Length: 433
Image (tube, rainbow, N blue to C red):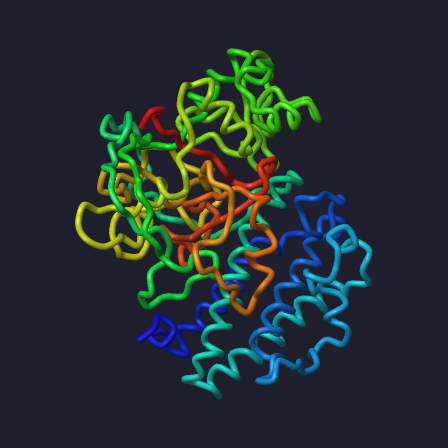
């Protein structure tokens, strides 16, 4: 029985409503010009993105017929407004978008119709698949709304309060490296009952040499040393591509750091605060992560090493999460939130070898280019993975803004190496291991 068969119609309807509630909570205070913002390559107009979420849900859950033809949208002209594969990014600010109230009404109408169809077609495996796809698609856009708010210096999102169990840090057990034994491991998602994306399919054997991986992500305190020692000025730490990126701007520190009256500060959404030394460095791109590794005499893990460290429990079979197969909660992972926590917090979420926060807190860059697994075949949403093979780098693990239902050890994120707007940091491995 698949996980989609295990989920009842009511479960899926509840997920649809929860995903919508989160995306609304992240945007409900935005008005006027904030619904558009400047024309930047790393953000979408919020008003367009709200409509696109509804369009995607309607397209896959309501409009597709068995012969792959399309029924009409409940919003006339929706395809010419919200089809992200057909509408160039830069044009999205120029479209005749419905006003906010009409956009939200379109969202509500589509959600109602999908829930009605779920009740009407209970047991329809194809519908259940596409409903789950729509839920996860909206979850990803909810995290993107976080990125937009940070990029444009909007106020911290008003989300429900979360538990603070396990958020204290300062544990000696989290220091240093974890030793991961070599051997043959399975990389990717297995054929277990689950919904997985096409780029996770399917698990296949990889040979891993023994390696040492940091138990924690690189902290602001550690990265501070690189900055203070002129790391952004020293050519020897940067690859050719990284140095070229650096010369295009005036970066001398991570994007949202500044030195004020001799002290470093960081911007979180619209507010500047003293640099939180025990939190992970965040908003660094792949080039910056690589440069720090050269400075520290370390390296980034490969994607296979990262997944092995997260999934290997010392017994046959892979863990779904670093701590086991139990679903994430506030004791184990910093997810569904609005801010990072200390790098050594949440000991209950540690892996078998003691690595903390492999799930949650910050996405972690790996050294691996995003590409297909052996035998890759695109799923019906063909634009999800295949167009980005070879040009993006793989990130793993999720961030504080990632919805808990979305993430697991095999989940692959991917961005181009110059992107710093995402909630990304990294952890390192020892060279020679």
